[in-house]
Image (cartoon, rainbow, N blue to C red):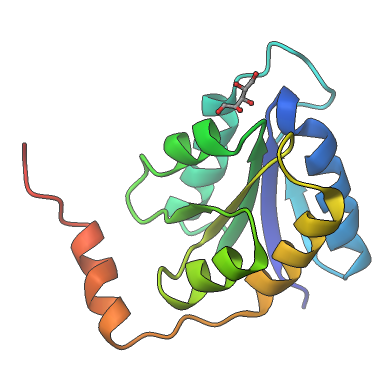
Amino acid sequence: MSEKIIIAGDHAGYEMKEHVKTYLLQKGFDVVDASAPQLDPADDYPVFGFKVAKAIAKKEFERGILMCGTGIGISIAANRYRGVRAALCTSTELARMSREHNNANVLVMGGRTTTKKDAEAMVDTWLTTPFSGERHARRLGLLDEPPQQ
Ligand code: RB5
């Protein structure tokens, strides 16, 4: 059975989201698109970051991909959910490190700051790089226990 991946973008990430969706479908992934049905400038990034993060936090999906204009706002939104590790990546090196060291379960990219070619390369790297485990696992555990303010 093919892996199910949830993706979404706000209006500024919409075009890139469409591109990544087509790319994933061509590769045989089962893609669930949590974006609005069509591009709408009123589509705000927190709404879509929360939708995908909630589905990951509830373990309905193991991995997700998010896009807004820069990737910054939507990654901030997604990371508000416990258990979600959304990594804004701008290169295949960061995509690789986000998997090896951070076990990122959401890849975030900027629709206005990333080329489609770079996005494809990051998606490929991110989806195929395993978590290194060991010392990194201890650090990930600490992420879920922030000291109370
Ligand atoms: C929308 O204009 C833009 O601010 C948003 O997509 C994102 O880049 C925010 O971080």
